[in-house]
Amino acid sequence: MHTLRVHDKEFEPYLTAAEIEQKIKSIAADIDRDYQGKRPLFISILNGSFMFASDLFKEIKIEAEICFIKLASYKGTKSSGHVITAIGLDIDLIDRHVIILEDIVDTGKTLSEFLPQLSHQHPLSLKIASLLHKPEATVYPIKIDYLGFSIPNKFVLGYGLDYDGLGRNIREIYQLVG
Ligand code: IMP
Image (cartoon, rainbow, N blue to C red; front, top):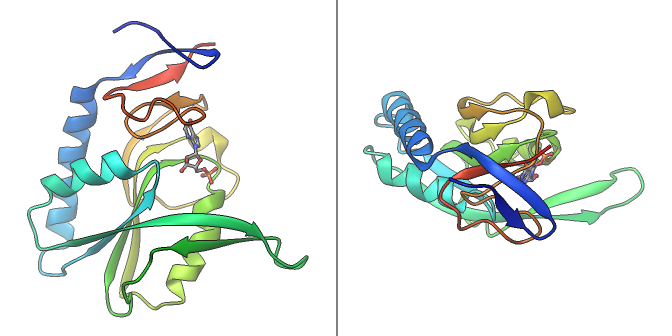
């Protein structure tokens, strides 16, 4: 694999497709074991997690459901600051075992704002599966229950993750050079 130019930036290979595939199989096995008989509902947060969600879901052997949502952030009142809403969440979460699928947890801001909204719907359980985590970037600590890779605080792209719209279709994960 060679370095890659996307827009104005240079990226170098970081995780191979085989490494990602192996990790996803191991996460799927853990979830199969933990959720046997519980029919979990996966909620994939678009856009970034579509590839992770698709590959992970194919490896899940137990009965399970999946839905896809998009988060929209808009400016609320002065007291509430930014408000995050979920577009497309049309399944009742009450009495469901929910597993959120994220591509990457960076500062943790997105999930820290969104998770309380899900908790309000009283799911039986609420867990997070994220392919990537940048621990050094944490501003809002999030407990990740199923994690693929802990990575340095460098911008990455590929495997669903984009840089200004490009790079989502790459099978590997690349890291910004420098
Ligand atoms: P957080 O709210 O700071 O945790 O950011 C989460 C979101 O930021 C992710 O779902 C991604 O869409 C985006 N993001 C954070 N880091 C990267 C990266 O290195 N590459 C591409 N997208 C990223």
